[in-house]
Amino acid sequence: MTTAHGARARARIEVTAAIKDEARRQLAAEGAARLSLRAVARELGMVSSALYRYFPSRDDLLTALIIDAYDSLGESAEAAHAEAADAGPAQRWTAVCEAVREWALAHPHEYALIYGSPVPGYTAPQATVPAASRVGLLLIGIARDAYRGLGLARPTLPGELRPEAERMAADLAPDLPPETVTALVAAWAQLFGLVGFEVFGQFNRLVEDRAAFFRHAAGQLAQGVGLVYPQRGPAA
Image: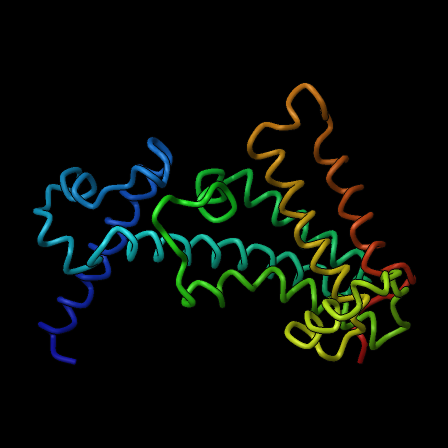
């Protein structure tokens, strides 16, 4: 790469970062539904046509922000999981859940972008899926370690739900029992419901010691997916 090409590449990275930073500021001030490329360009002192060379549409900018948010959340959860690597599955599960909560409280507007109300007129593309899957894959991995170790306590499964449970297991984790995969999907939804209630103020005047409440709730979710045996560390 020539010096000129290198300088252009660095400039593009810097401008892209500045556009995203201003867009995040607008998200915090106005919400995702009112995000405007023209407003971003105006605040940065750019003409709109120049900004379109970086993000051809509002949806392209939203997608970039969504992927960044999911990746940031995933990195936080993965770091917490790594720090608890020597603990048992239930402890690692709780560490991941608490990392999700801490990230959301520190980044409420980005959390709202990925887990809040849908943005009118926007449909997230397939490109967001790998980043969005990071936390879920961590939780599945923890259950898998337990299953390969001392085992999982299998949740009950109504007969009418078994075909759907088997379909979900085939799609998400074919090596785990359908009962476990169904419980994992429910726990994943409940985790983000708990976090969302706190981020969006639903626990105001209801739950005071929210950290302790959340830790207990995360432990209950772990039990719900069958993480009840006193294992330590991942299976060999």
